Length: 220
Image (cartoon, rainbow, N blue to C red; front, side, top):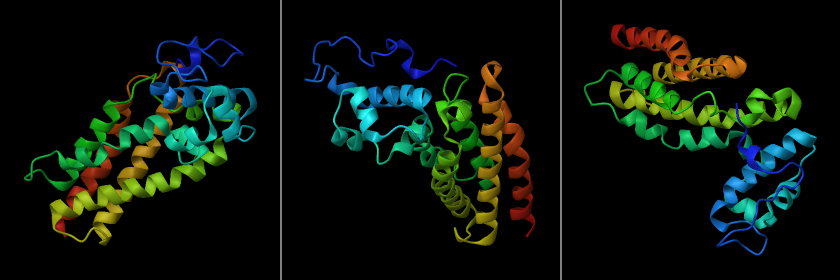
């Protein structure tokens, strides 16, 4: 895949200043993108663990305070594309008509989410984890995201099935669906530069889970 920072001159960390640039030479409107590019460069150069927030801000030409205007922690940079897509996921879960079965609605939402990712849209750390030294941090920062999506899926199932969102079946179904989705995303990422679209891989992993829990919800 083509990293986000490929257009920055090696070693400089700076683009030519243009109209509307800040005193640091960075266009104000693109500070978030500049921080992401700077972080990707530094993680590859000196590993995730060896890079500080101050390093990232300095490379991007912004202040430490500006960094925290956009990101709550350094690990958020590893999940930038994922977080941006997940922000729309609750709407995807609610998009199906009211008469659509719970697990069919969940499957449609998950596949729609997967449609937003292609071979070049994947967090850099996922495919270059050994080089960047981020494996432990990825695992730690993935957990709250995993649990948040489980809660969203469980609530969506419960709304359509009439169950409590914390009931056994909605919660178990949601956990299984999100686990299958994570497995699919991981397999897709490990496929390397020759990987195709994410959606077929996601369907292969998630559709059987949804079918199984659809039967469980119907036959109880």
